[in-house]
Length: 229
Image (cartoon, rainbow, N blue to C red; front, side):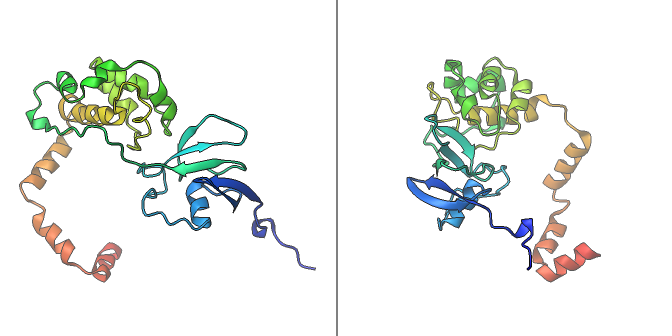
């Protein structure tokens, strides 16, 4: 009599609720995989599947718990009795347009573009909502007090999922404040690497335009041949 190896055994089925409807799915799937398994066609809300793009913010509740939690669906495994739903990745907060070549003082101009930053109530809801474990509240305070270096480092792993936006009682978009801070830190305050500056200048002067056009004209087979050689 033949034996079935452990790797060939069918995983046990568990019960989950997806957007209000109950399903049976194999244990060990991520939320995204569970949605695929149950026939959901995701036209948005699925991107890199590696926790980098921030396209799959999700609200969920585990069995026998009343607290609603947040996560990235591609990084979170389903549990028996879990209820979850993907949510919109865009929140209609005010769209701020700024050009750093017009910025005179990045730390003061933060309040021109994001004046609500000064209204942070220190409630920590943004930090609790962040699926990447960022200390968002401290990052916003760092921005408000002009400590862009430490603030930019705090927001370094932000994937712009926007889960911090709807929970803010002061109507701050913390991820946008973090992005502004990271950009300003890189442009105005970080030490410029000479090799990088030289390469950017070469690109601006068109040194690589001809080679770029040649690469764009190559077929897939020709590109593969160049990679091999």
